[in-house]
Image (tube, rainbow, N blue to C red; front, top):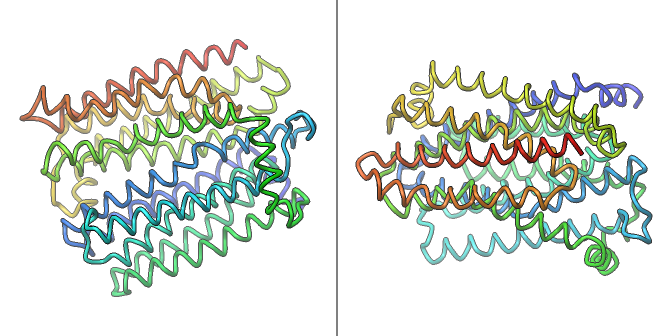
Length: 433
């Protein structure tokens, strides 16, 4: 246990294990595309992309409640929270959140089943789609376990468990190419994930000295939530919903304005690059969050400013590295990823790089301010992003119908640049607070 505590206390070790896990997550994400674009016909694969977008929407639709739990539990763990009687963190909140996540998954699954039954999502493999969706939705309880463990200084344990889970699931995914039934592969992935997440939540249970009744006291926990932090929930939910739509809307707006598969594949390529970058940035920021939150809650503005500037500089190094990779091999990577079914232009790649640079600033700001519970500020800055994301595809079709893909990316990148500027102003205010 002392060795584990030493690893947890080292920002360098924590950053390394988080980056290793991010690497596995990226491999898994690209492997999903690599495998299924070969295992499914192109029309089926387009439906699969819509399923993935809906799964991403569902996972993100926890409305930031796990971020609120992290912010409150972290303050409680550091000894700076209010007492239970005046709005401080209560163990019953965990049970209420777990119930909400379960209901969210159940509701989304019913919507998917209806979409499959009514033909809204056309596929000849409905069981595969259902299993994959459920597998993706397990990231909701995984997120609860991750953030609860992080709040009580259990970052290293979660990352080690998640690394093991990713290695096994990647292996199960790749053996589809060797002839394993995709439905069996995804079903086995479900089982592995449930075992790992169950162990992690059990560890949270023990570390917080919880009892079984804490998970089932929905009336007590729900009453505490309603009485003491509905405002945070409202701001967090609105911010998260705005961000979910902003990040995923182009899948649907592009499909609505054109039947050409190429613009959808180009946006999916950008989305995968942005996910890759955001996960790298998140790993780096999360490794620094224990120190950032301590400095903020202790009122040490000088140390907070130093840590935030370091985080921004490190994040930009990731963006520069990814930009170099895209400039050198972006077209080849695109061709390999999508099995040569479309090509990407140099102009598209340049616009993707601009958008990724702006996204880097946005990510640092969101991860830090969410950890500090500044959901109102995040909401105010998410609305311009939402508007730009929804408008980019229709405007591109109207203004540049002959180069729709280029027009869309230009407008989307411009939106991200403007939103990044707003986030820089927000971080500047935070550093001066």
